[in-house]
Length: 262
Image (cartoon, rainbow, N blue to C red; front, side, top):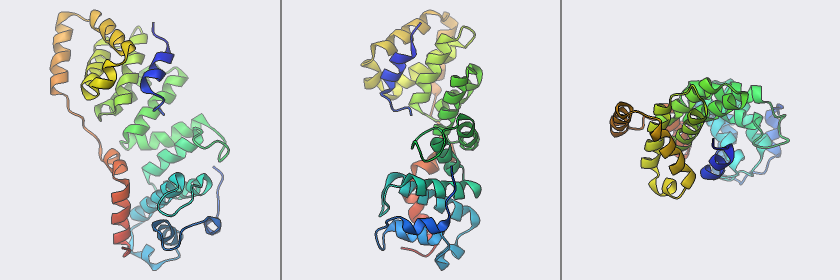
């Protein structure tokens, strides 16, 4: 059996709420006339521009406000507490990406900003996972794996893998390989897809090739033929929310134009 350590080495570490009043936002440093200052004015209700947005658009804009403080960009100081405030507001308004970020905070992304709580992390990330966000699906799978619920973990890893998330394919295969009752054909086919997606990275990892050979040896010739056909026909199918998350800056700019802001 392969330990979890080689997997973490292989993935290179890439795998990865108290409430505040709106008045607390004013204490944060913002560059005058920056994108961040305009976004905060709208989301805090200090601009008539907010009336031009639907409730769903306002919730999305609040999510983007959170991301500006989360990352310290576009004229905002990096401030996890302020980011958390806006993620809470946005999630309360029904925006699933904000729910995902709340889940990240509950999972310990910024220690000390909120008490770490795996139950709350699973709850909020689960909202985004159900809405189709691939990173949330991966994280929900990881939380179920930590709980020992490997069947649910595999199911969520597969949903993320089907969207083309490389890390989910790797974790799915490692988990399925170590579980006696898990589908080894499933594990093998996603490892092959992962190899096709990132051939140079996978070729450089002996542990990847070792697991690939091990899984192949467990399959019959008909199973191997079925895998080959599946891999040839496979195409990533990202869901709308995953595409939305990848278009962060563009979507923020479009929202600001809808609010009458250049």
